[in-house]
Length: 213
Image 1 (cartoon, rainbow, N blue to C red):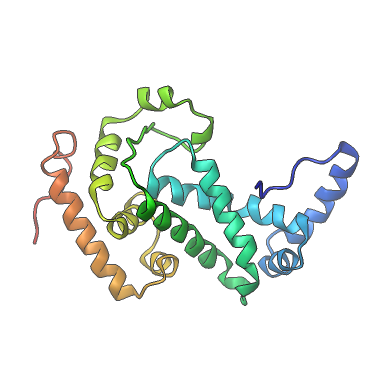
Image 2 (spheres, rainbow, N blue to C red; image 1 turned 30 degrees about the vertical axis):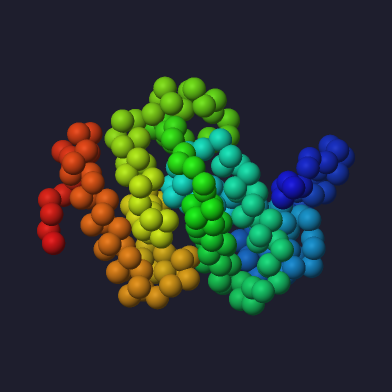
């Protein structure tokens, strides 16, 4: 199911572009439009937040050929549950929650270990052939995701959201639907596990901090 509306004939494109202006910079109008089933609003929602969703999935799960499918899963979930959103100002945080739930579900339901193919700059993983991803992979990034792959799903999520996606603690707590104190405890545990393994990895040991516990 494609969330972003398919391209329309050229004669209707200008009209759609003009209507899209209604939703620029106005989350209240955007949410009202989406909740009313307005396809232009749905497209505007996707365009505004697809980059954030893709980055969170990329940074928590690693580059993967099914990233585009996971992004679509997030927006399908958003569109089917958007009526539960009451405050337009909470849109970004709520959308992060849906994204993290999607990542968590994927990590928990995985029945086999993915050997992640990583590249130095990669946003458009769905356009990268698997062989190219492997060829361009950074040794340090591969080592990082090997360690993450051995961590519990919750530990991996909080570590990746903090140190790969760069989210603030308050954003993480909201996205993960947990208290700030719980988040800090889980992040401390994840950091301890990750850096313990990194200190024993030939590629990562030069920058991993010493044991401060």
